[in-house]
Length: 260
Figure 1 (cartoon, rainbow, N blue to C red):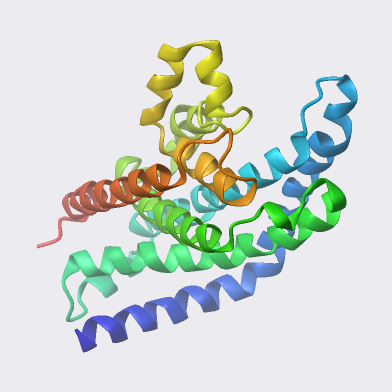
Figure 2 (figure 1 turned 90 degrees about the horizontal axis):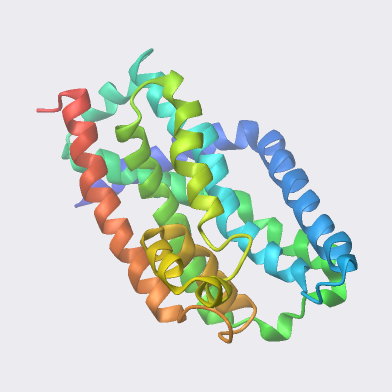
């Protein structure tokens, strides 16, 4: 156990070192994209007379999901490129720890880095929306639980994506076939309650999408439970997806890398 812990800490230190070198650029890209979203939905969309407070709604959804964008662009692509290039991952697989622990450590390190990256979006969102978003509606205990959980989910989901799309030229296909549908049908631009009102059958089918639980869980924690899926349901389902993505993703990676 001590060896496993030491390995995880060393791998985390390596990831943080790499992340620190590119933090300014990656954080700037994320903040710009985030800023554009909440300014448009917070100040321009409501002018259309819909009567919907889009600013906080989109702010929370963006904080919950922007880590996935960074994970696909950087972590997933990095692993696939490494396997077809320098194969530094082979070095980690020779360490005196089980191969499963190598992949678990990678996912947890990615989760930590993504949590740090998107943490800046909270104060940025509050500054931009100002009085539109009230901190009084935030349940800090629930926010802590769902924020940690969704970042761990993104870490293990990224691990699964790396095992499923094993060629670098598949990254574009990954966006079209996986990431875009997850966003479009993940209660990002609408609430699950609205989808249920529009078409109950389609709404229930979208419940297989883990992003639904990411966005709805964050909104329940930051905007209040009313109008969102039950917070504890979202938390439970996300941990189920974490275990599923971890198990299947590690199995695929072992097979791909021919790990003994």
